[in-house]
Amino acid sequence: MRKHLGTALTTVAMLAGLALLAFLAWSWWQSRLPGSYDVTSYGAIDDGGAQPVAHEHFSVAGLTGPKGKPDYRLTLTAEKAPVRLSSGQNLKAWTFNGGAPGPEIRVRQGDLVQVTLANKDIGDGVTVHWHGVDVPNAEDGVAGVTQNAVEEGGRFVYRFRPEQAGTFWYHTHQDASQGVKQGLYGALVVEPKTKQRGLDLALPVHTFSGHTAIGTHDDVWRRAVPAGTPVRLRLINTDSATTRFRVTGMGSVVAIDGAPIAPTPLLPDEVLEIGAGGRYDVAFRMPNGVASVSVVNSRAALALSPDGTGAPPETKSGQVFDPGARGQPGTAFQGAHFDRTFGLTISKKVGFLNGKPGRHWALNGKLYPHVPMFEVAKGDLVRINLNNDTSSVHPMHLHGHHVTVLTRNGKPVSPWSTDTLLMLPHERYSVAFRADNPGLWMLHCHNLEHAANGLTMHVMYTGVTTPYRAGKSAHNDPE
Ligand code: C2O
Ligand code: CU
Image 1: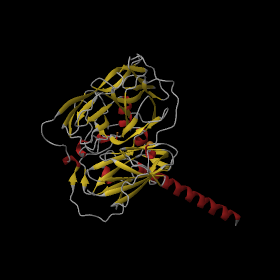
Image 2 (image 1 turned 90 degrees about the horizontal axis):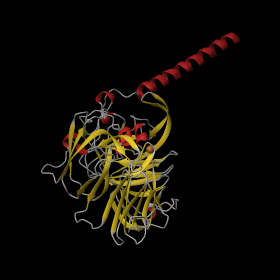
Image 3 (image 1 turned 90 degrees about the vertical axis):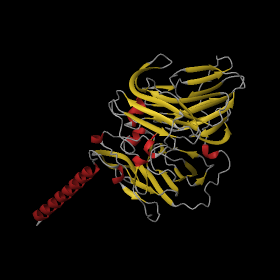
Image 4 (image 1 turned 60 degrees about the vertical axis):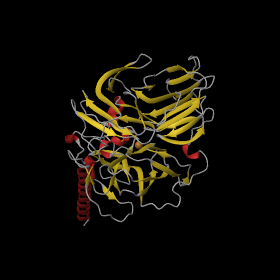
């Protein structure tokens, strides 16, 4: 009797063990990415609660920029080259036109911009994504989604007409977590139709193997600026981590992510905290003393003074500027009817990511590539309720659109427009946007390591198709 019971228990245990093994094997198997795949065929379509609409199929490849004679032309050649920082440090970098950052692109609002990308010797391939510019989809530069990565010896021509003046940047979107870190990025400034007088500087901040630099200045960069000069500084965070800036002697934050805000005076010692990929513009009239920007926890700083000898103060962190508390909580989209409402929860989950076991980023409880695909139709007013259910920060970037921030942790904020929303641990946000730029658009974390580890998904317009394939054998790996 006892012997039989023992045998039965052993059998049950063995069966349970086998079932667990079978489940693990199946989970592992279905997590693996095929050699190449169409991103639209993965994940679960979420229609945001809208009725299905009749639609025709249209390809990403047809959504190109305007024809005609360009007002601005440039060739960007991706190549490996040494870069010298102001302190004398020499670094190996991946560059555009021999520099990291690459050349500053400065165009006028409404210009037809034509940039030819040539890849000299970047073995992994390269593309150019115009971060924050709402370009037509085929010009968006996402390998495996809107184009094939440009291989060594290859070329690709981008054409678009930026309608919004502001501070943007460009970077590779092929193997971006590697390529951007190595130096494949630059500043992109769209000047307003009527040019502003004074000093206007784009300040892309980047950390090159441990050396943080403003442009290539990894120590104090001094400039002489006559008192009274109107100054505009465009801070661009090209790193994958949040960067803090201490600004002194300065007026106001005047724009976030390329969109103007009502000029908001900074308090003395106030600190600007910019998430990965984000931009803040500060503007002021040059004082009779020193005006400075220092990158907190680094030696990089810009010191402006009438005679060019000024020094930044010892960096100490003050209160952090909060874009959501600039005044009265706003009423953007109040009473509006949203055609679609999506929920997006970021969490961590134990499972297999492309065959690799571990605790990985999950979107609505699913690991990449089984993440949600948000479907919208042209003209829709769309709301996304974002929930960061992790103890990490996630700067969430939507391609092709700007979102307006409505609430944080359930409370209304003074609304601002952003393309890269910094979400602190356990924060919840509600944002809205008008679906006015048809295509297939990435929505991902701009901590590019997070994105490469599955914190990425897409928003698709009903009926869109792509001829491009992501995956190893297609040589397209956007993250
Ligand atoms: Cu600046 Cu999808 O990235
Ligand atoms: Cu993240």
